[in-house]
Length: 415
Image (cartoon, rainbow, N blue to C red):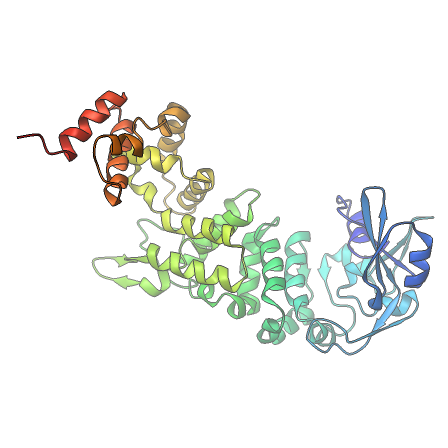
């Protein structure tokens, strides 16, 4: 067994997958098992299928020069001790013999586990020079395990940070999302900032650092501090909600002004545009991008829920993924003024309103309007929307009442 599985076994953590390293060649691995997939045979990687489980089996290897900041040009098969020297961090460079449960440690990885340290195997400038994604992996591991990063390793992360974008945005996105949805996203965001990595991938988030907020609403501090605090107060996060937290106030730095007090006029609209741009850069899926932008665009609507008409409130409560909107609002409040009255009202109304009350079956359809002699067109949407408002507010309860309302408001009476 190799890498993370051994590390997690020694830390008494749950194992999600087992990678296997072997002296057997790829051809020998294929010959030993009935079902294999040659996912990277040229690099010594074969996936072995056993019943419904899959295992990545890699032949001990040495890597040649890394040509693209991410992958070696070629590999040479070798022994276990030389194989370890190509791996990223000492805590990931441990082997375990499944026969006798003997740990094989060539790089003092067990010692670093005991001292809770993330340290590169060998020189950090060599390891990061080979694969720039390791910068993000170091930060993620530190958060995931609750470890510190060894001083020289951290210094080299800062040195190599400007080269991170040599890596594909898809790879950067995956590591970033693992940090933001992991066990300590608040620390992760701070590490990203302090290491200089955030400047390379999300300069818009760096701009939040030091941007003051009105203390009567935000006694906790600046925009970046507020965002970190929201992450700290959150439970397990979905990718959508994590991105929503990260970007809900992303529009504040460019809209900062001081009038009668500090103001961020238009920051929601600005933030929604910026959030879409950032999601596109990170190659976030269209569905997730749409949801994140919607979270940013609507996060201040909760201010008005107490004076909303029933029709407006019901439409708001029935929004897709409304529970994420509500959780974003709860964390926003807890990380600032602490007033949850609007959150509580929404929760109460969710209990009070039935699904039928929030999303009633329409009393009138387009064909009914045609039967009244109206011509199809934009006015149909206007009429049907107004009818739904009246229905949501309980002012129309039957088709007959609705038809009479249309007659009275949209049809010219006979002379």
